[in-house]
Image 1 (cartoon, rainbow, N blue to C red):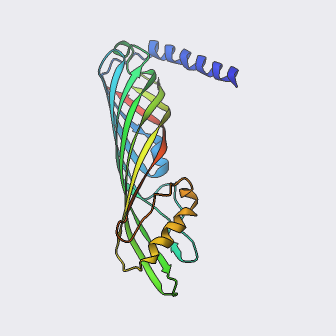
Image 2 (image 1 turned 180 degrees about the horizontal axis):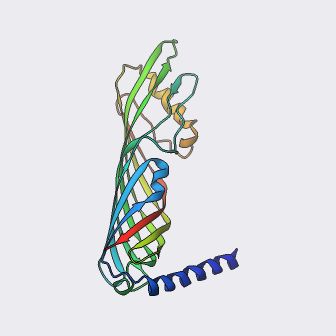
Image 3 (image 1 turned 180 degrees about the vertical axis):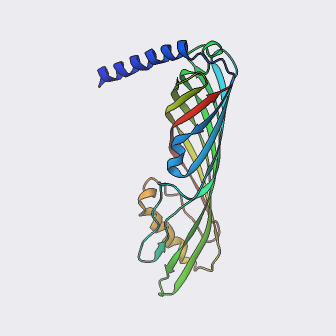
Length: 240
């Protein structure tokens, strides 16, 4: 494995040197389309601006549609049954990057590391049915909101493929995410529903990591938590 990693790094360095010699782009601006976001039904574009010999700033804007390959199964307990959970919304991602190359002469290519802040605002509909302790049936119709602020570090590699185009590999972006959830109820429900909802969430595989203070109540239908976050992506860039 160590030998393979050494060969891979050497190959990337060689490709980088060859690309810089053959495709020396001195553009101070780049726009990019994040191809990997399409998997989750999202469209994200980025703008990067050269600021110094090794430093650039990047701003990403994206929209997440309800479609996508990543779907969350709904709740399915004896008392609560809901539809699959989908969500939509937007995100904003400012970044600061430090390139190992002198990007004034080579263009914004090669290995880089940096820091980012990501803000996401999503909404979701949660519909279904609830059976109370007295066997009374209720309809569920919630509007849910999720706000996420993530901060972290990143490392990547941008490979030129022509004078203007390059492929940007964001290899790793570990960080921390601060989640805020809120729900608006459109139907009348008994107080006991929120106890049953919290119990259902505790048994929900996605929420295995939730802390005990993550709970909704009749009075305060909000909750929050902090979780590790991780970013990776592949983007097609154009320099000008």
